Image 1: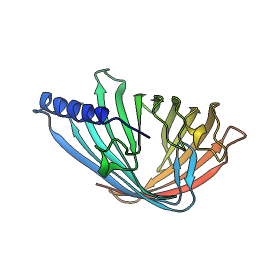
Image 2 (image 1 turned 45 degrees about the vertical axis):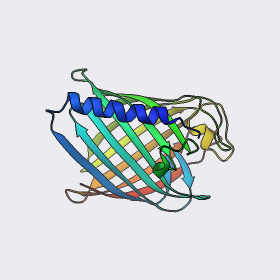
Image 3 (image 1 turned 60 degrees about the vertical axis):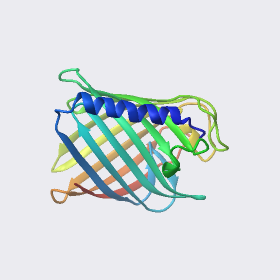
Length: 230
C-alpha cells in the first residue's frame, strides 16, 4: 500500500506531545511472545502453517504506543510489523479508547514513499465482560492485492471464567475480512470466534480458538496459541 510518510510523521508528533503532556505519568512496559499453530486474523486464515508473534507496548498515562509483529509465509513477505497508537478516553466506568494502526511489511523502510503500508482507525468501548469495537480502513492508494476502497469491521465481544478457564466469544461483521477470502468479495461477511484459555504459570498461557463461519464463502478454522507475557 502506497502510504504517505505524513501520517507516520503525525503519529510520532502526537506521541511525543502526549508524552510531554503526561511527563509526570508513570511509564510502564509490557509485552509477549506467542506461538500460533496458524496465523488467523479476524476469523480468516492468512496462510497455512505455524507463526511466531509478539507485542511490545509502552504506556504513559492515557497514551499507549505499541508494536505487534508476526512471522509470515506469504510469497516474498516474511515479517509483518504493525505499530499502533492508542489514547484512553475519560469515560468513567466505561473503558474506551481511540487509536490508529499501521499495517506494514516494510517497517525498516518507514520513510520510503514506496513502502507497503495501510492504516486503520479504530474505537473501542468496554463495560465489565462486554466489549464493542469499530475499525475503519479508509480508501488508500492500492497495490495489486488490495482494492482502493474503504473497509470496516465491527466486533461485539464477551468473556467469562468457568472452571478455571477463560472463555471468550467475538462476533465480527464487515467488509474487512471479505478481502482475505480465497475469492475476495466486496460484500460484508460475519464470523463467530470462540476461545478457551488457561494460565499455566504467572507468565505463560495456552488458548484454543475456533472460528465459526457465518457466511457461505468462509471456512471454519481451528488454531492454538501458547504465549509468554512479560
